[in-house]
Image 1 (cartoon, rainbow, N blue to C red):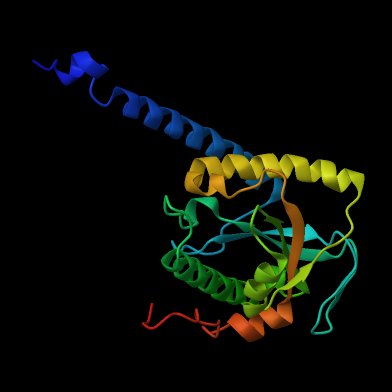
Image 2: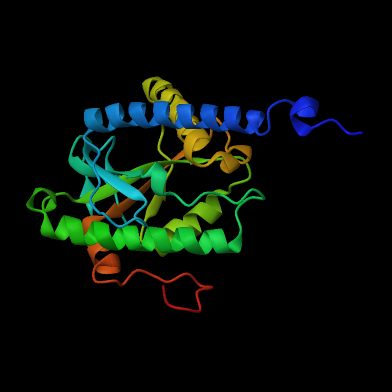
Length: 228
């Protein structure tokens, strides 16, 4: 006669509960550390939309930048710095990113940039800011031309600047943080995330942000056939 499940494999669900406890503990640790970093860098949430996947901070341009619309940003000039809102990013399916995931992510980015455009137009503190940028990593299997295509649809321009030794040391810490955030909020993406990815900057001018995304004018996903 077969032994009861408790005797054959220990307490029912014990391993599952242990794994869940470790995941919850890791997520709480990462969330606490993320809160410290957000306060230090002044990163804040400009929208209460649960589909907003971006947060914002004041920063300084790391180098001189000239954008396609003619906007020029001098090194050290105040700019907006965009950060992903990790808790709001749509999680990868276990089998990896799918067309449905891409559509959801596209919608989230579109809504986020619409909210950002409305925010920087209405908030006096942002009226003199010429441009916004974010740092991105190209993980294993990702291609620059794909990133270029996606970002251009939203009005961003991709830059591959020269990085100093100090920049690279700073990037090492950021890569480790990104791994921790991915482990906490989107673990299925770890298989595709390269720990030390290739760095890119994506920029958008205030002018382009308002022209493309204000009042719901952001581009729809090519495969969208129904309204949100």
